[in-house]
Image (tube, rainbow, N blue to C red; front, side, top):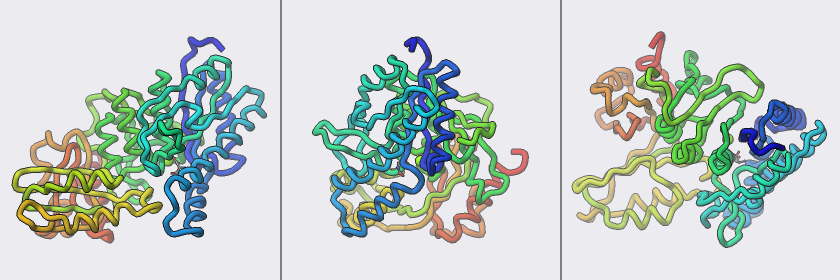
Length: 402
Ligand code: ASP
Ligand code: MG
């Protein structure tokens, strides 16, 4: 196949490949893209709920599955999907080859369960594309320098797609799922939430950290670092999409979304915390936000879904609860759901705090922590209040004709 044809990376989530009918639809999509004159790389997640079932299987054997063996087990999910999809594409008359993360040259560090990609060397993918193959890649996995199989954290197939798109200088990285893009709030909870057609990498990253779904924070961070444009679309071909890129149109809204992220904790020390860097390093729970001043140390942490596997978050919070500051005092601690507005206007528009407080008035107490971090203005509320709070913020900042 001529090597000047543009490369397109298409990623399909678990719900898009949940059954044979879904696999056939994805196969047809890849074939149509190829026949339109592109070189095609398809990154797949495990079929349907396979990953959850494998985690559960491990926990039926032991409450504390060995991390290395768990990674071995979980990567099997994507392997099944990639091989079946390659067969389906061949059945449509086009050549296809499936490859594991390791075969694609996705090199990671050695942190099992949540490894980070350090380098991508996609020689075999390139060769297969040049030989005219559609290349199917198992998402969510790589290999460490020590040749150990690793996983990239739950939802990590997005990261695989972005990393490959960057390494192959792909024309586009398309992320297909059961929704037609990223919304101004969760459309299942806020009736007038609307699709955001254009977002900057920074905004999307802040939204993902604040709990927005559809695109994972790691994937967006990688896209931002390598200037990869992301196209979030629905697998069923509905029109519409969200494009996430470095320089989105300047005339878009100053507040993009209202979000919520359950299971967060804010720790507040009255001074410097000498041991904090070491403690954080020992746990794979990156803070959502941290602030280190001579008279205050603030740390905002969130538990993510991957934590169901090894509950690092709970152990880290337990450890931090007792961690003394330079005066020997433990932190104050507030747990709850992080409710936020996110957008380029935060930190630029002078008075967002007044409408923020007004919208949340019945829910805020003088003790409710409110904090601005980057493009995000947040507060921590009781979980039962979060839906109402997001709806109120959406109505205030994004409602009606705003
Ligand atoms: N199958 C993995 C998960 O369920 C990775 C992914 O879907 O992106 O987390
Ligand atoms: Mg996903």
